[in-house]
Length: 475
Image (cartoon, rainbow, N blue to C red):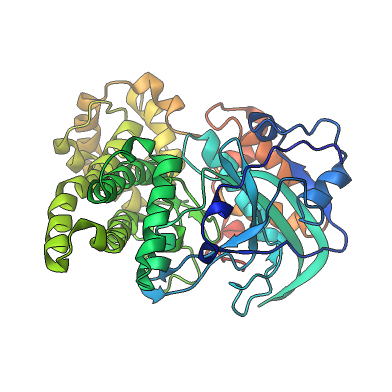
């Protein structure tokens, strides 16, 4: 093997209750689909003399490299508002850290956290996460990354029958979640909770290290509010719907994690839901900000023992401290949407104008991405894209008086996004053994703002026959 990876294993230095040491399972005939050479280079992974088959063996977990100490992490979570005290990596193995980033296999076999799952992944979710995570990165959204995707040569059995299996290599600043803290808080294991707090601060927020435990906990909450409010504002500006914003998918590093049933808006709708398991719209498009706030409160509950010995006083202090910072979520979301309209000096009085435009998009069932992209043309001349109405004429007049940087809009509003029907086409063709469209889609998404005549199909909304109505976890 010629692959050179210098692993570090700081997470495995934590006590054994944080994880299970376990190797990935063996897969019959792994085959390389894609290897992210650019990301590998950024991580100082020496891949140049490694064959495709060697990469497939390594990133299926069949070959464990020197220095790697595979493990499955423990965590809990509120799933759709319901407490699950033990979740954990039921189909994932952390191989170690490289240049400060976790390297994790997804779909690599059972662990003690698998519950009734088979520990494997169908190929579809692997391809979906590869496409979307890399596109989000290019669009400037903090996210996990995708280093490699392999097919396993084995079938997995899901609700609709057998599907080809796959494994994704996910790269992340860490896999520490709000649910990781909840795992120990629910057990009232204060020693482990403190160890996790120390580890998280050392790894992500060393500027908090010198503070006392109370101020560390409060400071960590403030840091997460700052990062997550930025993150979800960026999601919103792209029409992205996460789909499963459970606390086990809420990253302590402030990055997007878990792309299972995610989707992007086609026609705009405030309460749009794609996830097949989100039956009550808990994680609908415009409800993602309230859910993020709810998740922050769940983290704060974990820190009550560090705030004050008197629980009531601790809760009162947390509620007081959280009130004003949590308003950042709403402000930043509107600011990001206003920026897409050319309003670079957002003021709270602009919220009415932004909302007016969104309500118009919903009323006319207009495509979210193309509507914002068309605003630059609308500023200079009438546009047939927007149906005429008195309300819209009034909006135009107010909007044109507020625009500051209309000529920059084509570098703010992407033309090419990972549209749901394009992802589905890539998956469908891959299931026949043809990965050409998958590779083509990934290539187009590396330049989301630059219009190319030969890429027209990647900018168009779906035809009625192509429309995706639901997305699935695929677990």
